[in-house]
Image (cartoon, rainbow, N blue to C red; front, top):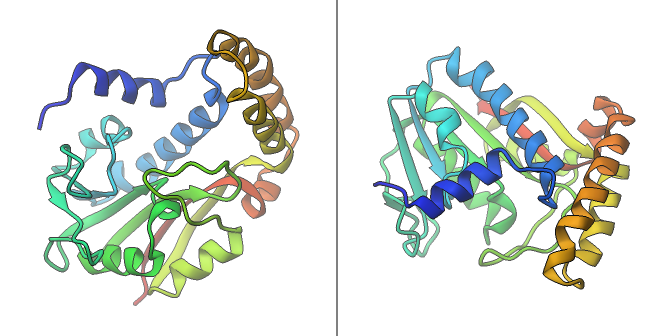
Length: 235
């Protein structure tokens, strides 16, 4: 299915935002983490088929598509980009043991039943497949169309491992102090005129970046805005 000019522009802005974007630092760090995971677990591995589970407008497709033979897009029926639909029960219309990798970016916080979502991810994976998942620790409420969950690092690992996965890579992006500034920015963002929003972002985003650079990666792995993990099926 081809993409529209608007969809391509939105995807590019998510991947490569400018300094006037109030999510500049966050989106940049998330992209870098997903690039790192792609290079480490897909590009150099054997993941030839991938399912983007809860694909939305598939913002990271351009990063991954060159390294896989088939990129399945899975989402709710109302998403015209989805090739495979999620049934009202939460099940996916896909056979067991179909794909080498499942990609889940900023989806888990939106699903009504995370356990079912993760079990479906495991079901469609081949026995040596991998789950690549990112979701929020701290973040503002953002229904799309729903918004149910936030995780601590321990809680996210626990819910993933309880569904038969072994976490083999885990990183946090944007530590507590920097995320505090992000939330401070967002507190004003929706209360000021549109023409002032880029000005606010231009002032706040460098501060957020500076504050984040003073936080160790070890600290961010425990307490962060977003966590990125890779998991394999337990043997």
